[in-house]
Image 1 (spheres, one colour):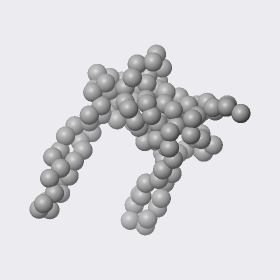
Image 2 (cartoon, one colour):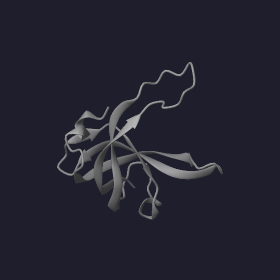
Image 3 (cartoon, helix red, strand yellow):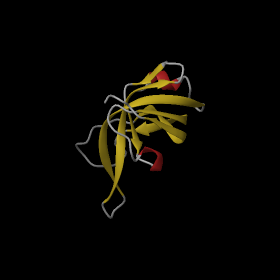
Image 4 (cartoon, one colour):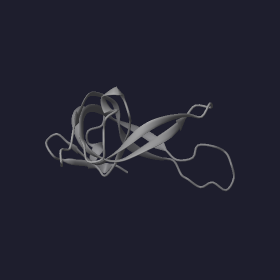
Length: 115
């Protein structure tokens, strides 16, 4: 659980994270694949640690993001339930509450210049 985010539930803040990996996720029943980025770690703009990692959808602002770049954005902290909510036998994933960053806006990509 992202305990550090729980104290900001419902608030909109500025966050910063470093791109550590590219990925993708499936969406919908037609096998639509959407690109994602892994940000790790994630901190507030003042430097307070809030999450060890966060997956973010690649938007037009992040199309040129590479590993090592820094992403700065505003987002709202929100609670969600995770775990298995179905009725199949043999699956034991109890439902728990966790926190996420929702509706990112004002995204700024800071390129890592190492050359």
